[in-house]
Amino acid sequence: MKTALKAVGLLCIVTLFVACEQNKAPTPYKITGDFISMHSEVSEEVAEVEATVTDEAESTESEVNATVEEEPDLPVDLSNATLTISYETTNSEGKVESVTLIEESFTGSFEFESETVEAREVTISLQLSEDADPMELNTVIGTGHDIHFTLFDHLSPRNDQLILVGTASQVVNPESKFTISGDLSVFGDEFADDSTVYLTASTIDENGESQTLRWGPVLVQDDSFLIEGEVTEPILASLSIGNSNSSGQTYVILEPLAEISVTKLGNQTTELGTTTSSEGYHAQLVASWQNDEEYIKRVNSWTTALELYRNPPESEETEDEATNVEENTEEESTESVASVEPAEGCEDAEVGKYVEPVPPVNESNYPEWYNLRMQALEVRNATLQAVVEGSNDRIAQHLAMKMAPYSDNADELAAWKTLSEKFDAKFVDIHITPNIERIEKRVMLAASDAALVPGQKAPEFTLLNLEGEEVSLYNVLGDNDMVLIDFWASWCGPCVDDFPHLKKLYAAFADENFEIVGVSIDDDHEDWAGGVEDNTLPWIQLGELEGWFGHIGVQYGVGWIPKGYLVDSRGCIYEKDIRPAALQEFLVDRYGMHDSLVEPDSETEDEQGVSG
Image 1 (cartoon, one colour):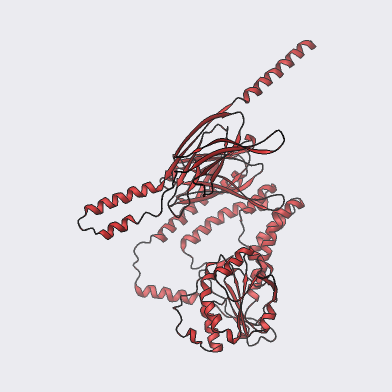
Image 2 (cartoon, rainbow, N blue to C red):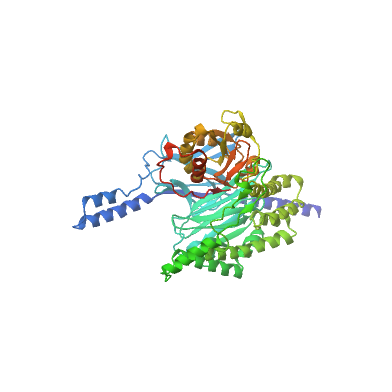
């Protein structure tokens, strides 16, 4: 009996071994590549126009030349292009080395067939010339999918692109695989074969460092696409599909074995719809509201209203009616003057009074489509809030919070603090505490902005200048009559637009002891220094370099830039949120007109600043 059992056992082992060997059978794969140029289409269109113009007796030579000049840039030159396909492996000594599968000239078409016994990530690299940086993309061979890539020669200003076509598979471990696909024929011509699909996610590693994960991009082929990737835990990601004319986005929650399909949501394409056969977090948190009939109804309402807003019917409104509407709007936008008790010694600085700027739009005068869109958002937020406040699944709660379901700071702060009690200390430090601190600073910033008005004292601060020297605000104030504290950043367009006028005022009133202290909220020292150099700023330059929520920025209520405070030698604030036109009026009133300002350049209305 024992002998028989041993024989059966041996037979099972042999059968299992044979099955394992069969699973390691080589997997064939094919890699093909081609070249798509948008320039050829433009050239054909130009040629057709030229022929038409030539045939017309009334055409002029200048019209023909103007037509020829419409070609925006030159097509890609493939005469020296080199294609390389390689992968990394670990040798017997434990060192990582690169293995080249293919290295050859690329003339616009490519085909390679082979087989592999395991899924392996490879890098496809295309270098157009010795001086050019290679374009690269990563994919995986041995997944059962053929690989198709193309060099997409876009028209300027879009950069040329090496991109996968139809399918992007980056799966080595099938047990961690997620799948996102879409039959885009339901969108009609919105997302044709020139559309690109992007999948990205922002995550935080165990050291608290932010990182961006990407899958694809992939070029739509035959109205469809497929993206396969790997995750070991649920991750909130953003999926985008777009071309030069249309774009659509949606949240997706990636998790092992998830299968998500993209479809149309209602009668619009701004938000992509999703469905899933998997019972996971995506079904619970995203597909749930997207498949809600009330949500779809409201989406249809706001998109219909938006189309009407963009293409209104011919108005029958008379000129008098239009005038009355404008007058009524003006009356409704009048803001009462807020009175604040002035600080000691600052009684003459606007006598402690400040008129709050009236928002350019408020709830009563938003266009109808916007209000309808906010109503749709309420349905979505209610679904997520129900999870945050009622679910026993802390992972679901955390994912829901990452989609920002609360518009009120107090509610959002309370939800994050409640959630922090459900995770261990390390997870809270990395994933939750930064959100709590961000909201608390946002609340403090708003409170500072409300309290820091003319008649109050400007908070003292000390920052480094570009030479690394400490500069105290109140030392600068003590040496001058009036000082403009100008919060700005190198990337802020309205800030840069203000500089020419500020330079004129700085030069005109330098002898009157007028000074400017620029405070950069850039994140990077090089960006700050570059901004000063590019704009040749002659006044004192200081840098906090902590973005929107630096300590001094929060103290001064810097929720947008440019943001300026006009302060006297005692630190009393005379003007707040002052821009160059108003600053000139103040300085001229205080010191008199300077000769250089007698015939100033035509002044356009100050633009709205950049909000944080």
